[in-house]
Amino acid sequence: MGEIVSASAPDALERAMVILRSGGVVAFPTDTVYGVGVHAFVPAAVARLYQVKRRPTDRPIPILLADPEDMEMVARDISPLAWELARLFWPGPLSLVLPRHPRVPDEVVAGGNSVAVRIPDHMIPQRLARLLHAPLAASSANLSGGPNASTAQEVMEQIGQEIDLVIDGGPCPGGVPSTILDLTSDPPRLLRQGPITRAMLADVIPQLCPVKFLRDEEPLNRQIE
Image (cartoon, rainbow, N blue to C red; front, side):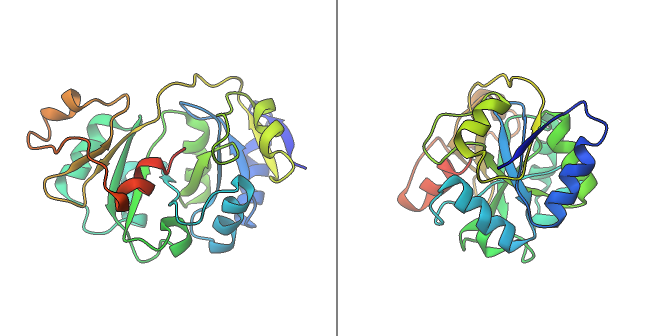
């Protein structure tokens, strides 16, 4: 059973690092709800994350970064537009779908050729990724299809038996999931509108395609649940 440690504890992040580096699973607060994540470059850890959440393996897992420059670790052929969007909207609720870098394990992207990345507007996941020197493969800290967890105790009620540690940062604000913008198509496509609206993106992407879901896009739309 996972242990809860206060985010204010002096050794909280150090303990999380030991677990993540060994392929373990850690839950943490974010700018929306609690997330649960693993070292994104450890395939066995990513496979365990799917098991913890009872998540279908055909649904990709998004990646959380510490800094915009970290896109280069997980994506290739990064366009000037991607860098500009990162400058304008990160940290924050915008997920960018980019061409996958070969180092990203198949387990993260469900065998696909693209990866969704963002920097959450919360210091704990940012610091975890920065200290790890690697991105986090992360999803909401709940059973797939279950209610989102806004507190550490709610995380424990759903997946506490399956994970190694919960960093308790107090209640999360909840709210609307992030906007998902697909930059692998030309023009870019808005896969899901969230807090970053189409109107907010219009100045940067005048030719933005409207929200349009096709069967093969559905996992991208649902992947950060």
